[in-house]
Image 1 (spheres, rainbow, N blue to C red):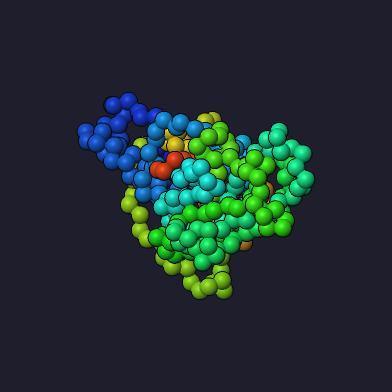
Image 2: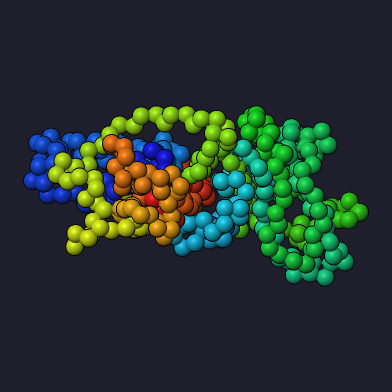
Length: 394
């Protein structure tokens, strides 16, 4: 188990624990414990933000609109009710960002502000989602059955109708007598915008007959942010990867040489640390030795103060590992070969200072957060190694 994950588990226990009575604080830390506990909480919040890849939490403000249904559906597809990833291969990359059109034009033109996308994020796929409205009754018997819908990247705002002022990104035939969401891939344009922010002049959608003529606007209509319901607003969806991947639990020098030493982390005071040994945690309330096992560790985002910007989940069970790894180690304790040898050396007292193996997570799962960023965009992000799936003696 990595030192960073051990620290995070300790931070969560500190953060979520109710503060003890004043007298108990003084016994543990001395008369200045009040200020020290405040510093510990601030440090815990800062470290927890680091785990979630943030310097500061997004602003918690009154939300005027709910998250897009597409993002809610995507979240429930990739995550269970607790936010734990169902299948790590379902999501392309580890981040999905949604953006609403900022232009609200009468024409079929859209502009999306991508300033919240970090420079280190690799754009894997970009999609334009636009909602097809039902044709008006006066054109319901049009002789046309299909039309050609094309999406262009604008290159010169003064020449949007000329070939040199725009670049074709995607085009396809769609039936006229239908309605619903249409999705177009525009990855090439978004990558160019990320490389040169000033080149983001927006997108334009055209609708033509199969012969290339102009379609009646009443026959094929798309919802805009100005005149139609929030749930039908044009939306840009980005699938990205920020490169934050957790190291595997098992590694070998053959995978890439010796592992670099982890940076030293400041020690945090633990309540009652001076009154009991670390091994006392291996016993239950009746004084019986407790075998290595997984136990609950619920992280409540409301208690931390993050419920104002996190949509789902409201919290999750991170679990933690607790118990002893006594000799002889049975297979039910899922020991590694190294732990088995260490247990034998400890039992036979062949070498001084060799402790029993430790009870730690041997399988870790990722969780997913659906949240609002500072620009009111809804983001779905996957975080590795956040839930202890099982425990073993290592």
